[in-house]
Length: 265
Image (cartoon, rainbow, N blue to C red):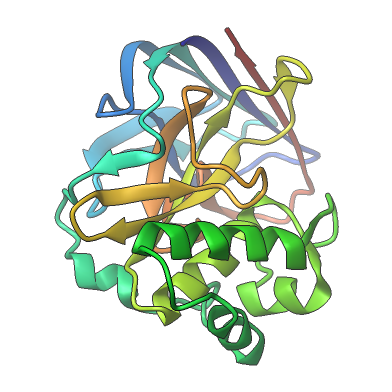
């Protein structure tokens, strides 16, 4: 599938900013599931200082903001050719060792709820079958509800609430998969929706490492392994390692954020 993607992030402030730094992970790479044929970056109100691959292999850019801007706009866009691999991404690569993805993080630390969820997975069947069963359990226990959680909600909190979004589903799956002995990681990216081209947020899902297959994707929000409608952008131990835009700023200005995404075939 050939997908055309545009992702715009706009910040408006009611007072000038004296200084700010932003880190971007908005740049997909070619791999076993996709080929990036075109990708561009446009910046208003800031400038790119450096670009590098982080320890997880993500294309990362740092922006600085000076000169008291009231508005910053970051837009990435391009074309990606995707293919359906039944969710299989392949062998582990990158500087981060595989064992790192067995370690808990503040957002994915398992509590009693996650431990109980992991125990609910049947010991029978293949590793892939067990992970599919876990994916379905996460979706059964946590209804997809926009606004029920936020960026700092933990896996345990979302599971206890019984509501969340794709970020929460990914964190719960990751926490439980690690409890079952699987290295697991968070993936941020895009999903071509049947409902339309326009979106207000990017998508997220999880990957678990299976012996003999490598990394395999599981999207609990949609109860499927990623297919040709998905575009992988960044990976990490949890959301904070793979979040599209994050930063710090000096000053007391009130911030308004607007995100516009289109994913079209």
